[in-house]
Length: 331
Image (cartoon, rainbow, N blue to C red):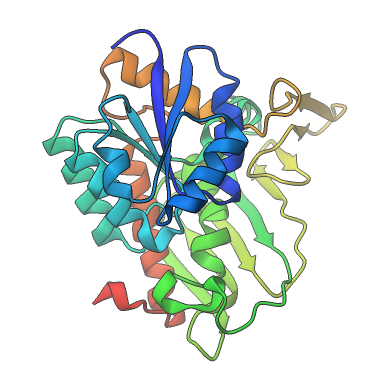
């Protein structure tokens, strides 16, 4: 496939708006349609972003012959249904994270994509961020020796009422799938799937996690200390500690514009790379990778491989098992 890649956006929330703006700035990309559960919401979104077609149902979007790739931006409780609908209609899919509610749903989507020979990728923009990619290169090349510890956290305190999606088990509520997926994915990126998983959490009356701490371990002796919260103000920072130095991501580690490399006997080195042209969020990198892969006829990205996504979902399942969080979709 060559030429322009035509996108359909499924959902009309804030993340869909940010992604749409980034995609529209990419050469060779066009957002041709948007869908919501209501036509009014889809039309309002289309008017704001200059999109030609607006649909009041997901089915209409995936049936649109002009759409090449569907970007799924619904809450994660609907990811499986939305992505499956698009794949069955023959569309390539970029699906927001957390990829699904559990690893079973994730496996089903991966099998569906492979059965239909279609591209599928989790929208883990961290993995495509140029600063993170440079960090992983340095770690792979031995800049800080052998990794001993990864520390990462993501949290903020919000006044979420019991009916809010972050406290609703039916919607996959809690800190873990909304925020904890980032620290977990960061640790996976550097160390792979852990061999041992421990976790503890403060749960809400509804049974979702409000504040979660995780300790992951690998046979190499490496550990990861991770946390997430919707009741505490975290620095949202990360540190990778090795036998010969460390790398600090002082803020917004999930889409950083810099990191600092510390090595004994040397001055700290700051590596920077912004999100790109002014006004873009950094989501353009994941969109560009999807477009590259689709044009090349690839069904998954080597930078965000499906097996890696499945491994993250297994870890999230294990953490939920340790802290006692179950969703209706798990049964």
